[in-house]
Length: 303
Ligand SMILES: Nc1nc2c(ncn2[C@@H]2O[C@H](COP(=O)(O)OP(=O)(O)OP(=O)(O)O)[C@@H](O)[C@H]2O)c(=O)[nH]1
Ligand SMILES: [Mg+2]
Image (cartoon, rainbow, N blue to C red):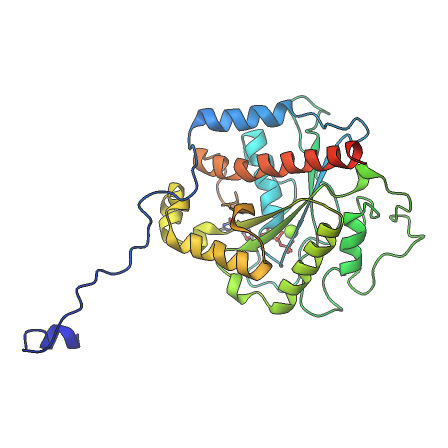
């Protein structure tokens, strides 16, 4: 306003710099948004066989703050694989919730065409990490899950971790019971609001997984909420500066390299599949499954 009024006066120079662009000219990570690429990724998943005969299924564990979109991601994987809307791991839409909806530990199997046939990988999400030591899931419980000591169906107790002797406690876990890839989920629209305590818990879990050599991936959900450009056109995911900034925030908070962070838009309102959304979800799934498979292979063949 001030500039507008006085810019004609001698000695008053107007800043001619154009406003910073919100987009890069070229995507900084290549994506092939075609139906053929989607089919190719789906075909590889359909053909997948676990490299180790004793491991019939790859176990993928998702962890992260309450409402980060963990259950929605599992539903999204199912939706992409089935080609239609599903509700395998119930997600909760109640606004502003401060408790976690997912309290039961369960690996969700993914149906593969014919009845009774499942993909050789499954996903579990762990009850949201909450600030304070007396709420949310205990770090000891997460470590038990990583080691395969907690059986499917266990309901987490926020007061105390599982005890030996509990019917859901597996005292002799083997490679097939362990977690084969750990996925940390952060919401793009809210990263800065996540408490340091929750971030520290996530880093602790990551460190425990690292000690067990478990491969790790970070998913950044809610990209549509974080960036209007991406909300309008998902193809702008790797040209949006906002999204790259949010990914850098994830990198700095968790201390992970950019190349293991994947932005996704979960299925949560739509009932029909969208090609762009499917491709963006299939990219991390393909890598997660590949990392998990090579982890079990390494555990057996390099010992
Ligand atoms: N716009 C948008 N909403 C999403 C996305 N992912 C999840 N949601 C919504 O966010 C809310 C929380 O998602 P959930 O999947 O229940 O989150 P969660 O991490 O499983 O939460 P807890 O089990 O409570 O720890 C739900 O209302 C979802 O519909 C996304 O990518 N974009
Ligand atoms: Mg959940």
